[in-house]
Image (cartoon, rainbow over all chains, first blue to last red; front, side):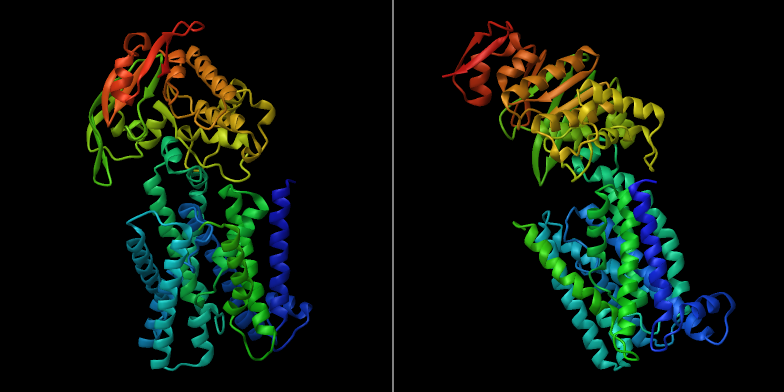
Length: 324
Length: 254
């Protein structure tokens, strides 16, 4: 068994254990044995385990994967260690669109959330592109523009939430990212997008390896670099947007997961993508499990916890890549 | 024969190449020389398709390269850009396997034949012992050989190199030029951008001299390399003597 397979298997095992733990823990703690029995046969705890905690865990895993893969694609194309969908303002655009729609039509079917968020994400991406197209922006400039756009978009969300007061937990979803109250009704709208987008990202992995040698070199090796850039960026925006549609902007996952994966397995995208997806899932699931269990029955938003790890790491990156 | 016909290229609103007509003889080593900013690198980028061509054609054996798909073009000629990026931790063998891209599917799986070509390229550049080392741990000379191996694995008739010797010390420059001669003996046609005029005269069969995006002269070194040309192209006063070792023209700036 290669080191890589071992790493992947231990990641899956860790994720499985964490999921079991997360199923057992909460305002009402259950023994693991009860949890496993309930998963298979239902029973007294059927609601807590199968209808409350299980879908939430699945969403945490799916969203973590989506954000992480989006980060790998963005960093691969922009070749900027500071690039990630949330720092660039793409998640902000998706969040604003989804939040606006829910405030205007509170009873709209969840199926519409991902496409609306997608529209918001693409609009933000278009604005970033327009602001940067005059010259090839330096990494720090791109990050700065993104942070400015993110700040603007989240103040728009703030403004909307003041105009249309909602329950504090649902406000938290759009302000910092949270999995509060996410159930099976949010799993199904998310799933088809990921089933298409995740394999498509793997399909781009080899070309992204070549793209890492520089655009000229990739061109000379026969890569359609323009097509690759468009395909990868559109997938990145779509992955981030559909994730945000379900639980808001859970920050820094798209930045942290790819970096951690590269640290573990090097720079080949074929190897980085699965590991980053696992790391992203682990990050969001642990953040949400902690968020539910630090002070039950009160909940912290998961986004606050990812920011506690993510923000210092961002500062470290800024420090490491001097000259940006 | 690779021929460039009426080629014009503009970028950022400035015309860099204007109505350029150049033909590159098959089976030879051709040096592309000229002052900084004369359009040498632009010409290579136009041939590789990284730059949009305003007008003109790039023909290889009668076929218009600009009309071929990316992969088909990369099967006809390979180009090593001036300063490619070395990703962290990438091994020499992995880099060389990237050279097989034009023959692979989008998923990138290498066949037995691909692996053989990669191995041959490693042998030819003397890198078999270093094949599993990360490129960022190699010396400048070894690193450049790894890039050359990648281009060799691409297995094309034409190989274009943009300033391959620029960051190397003299010993490694000579090593690289001799490696090019060996590749040429094995049937490759090489086009190389060089700044060292004496090396260009010594190791290359054909010179293409450019200035301000236009062709000034092209022929064998002993036919065109003279003090009038140097004055005209580089604004340099020099005497030309015969290199006693290689029996080729050689310039000494005054």
